[in-house]
Length: 196
Ligand code: GDP
Image 1 (tube, rainbow, N blue to C red):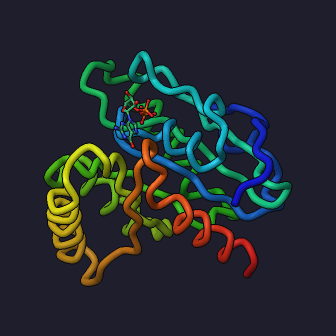
Image 2 (cartoon, rainbow, N blue to C red; image 1 turned 60 degrees about the vertical axis):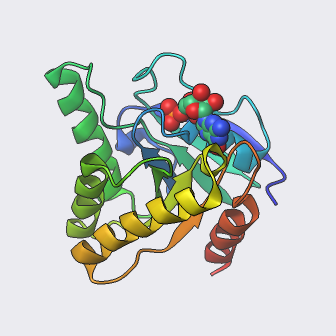
């Protein structure tokens, strides 16, 4: 259970992020995957992360302090068709610099839309994470949007694709910001990692 969550700071440069004195868990995914909704659901604060009215608006590394114990980081979404090449390059550099240099990053939660078949951009992104030894887990979102069997079928397809890349299943959680399914499991995972 998260008792206390507060916004700390937004940055474009990982060097200006808070001193890496606490374990950190970051969230990333395609725009519209439900990242803001998930962050708000996990923290029990409807307004902590701004849900994206306008895609591509949140281009910052957003730090939140959780229970005075760990950092939650809302990273800008990837995979926007409508942004210019230069904006895309700026994001990519910002995200890759952050991910490869942030020493206290315990796990990157890569959000995957459970409604969809495996998407190339998500598979490319986790491949990049593997190549750069970024510790990541998968968080499937919007599980309430379709029947359980459809969700499980999509999850299974994604895991199969991931297994082809990594030779094993990544750790994963199935969540819904609407029903709060998966909330306890994901927070328990994070809190157990924080204790270590
Ligand atoms: P972001 O761009 O990844 O931050 O995505 P948002 O959190 O803004 O969500 C994008 C859209 O999906 C919004 O209309 C949300 O209300 C909706 N959404 C997000 N999560 C869920 C969920 O778990 N269930 C349902 N039914 N809708 C969701």
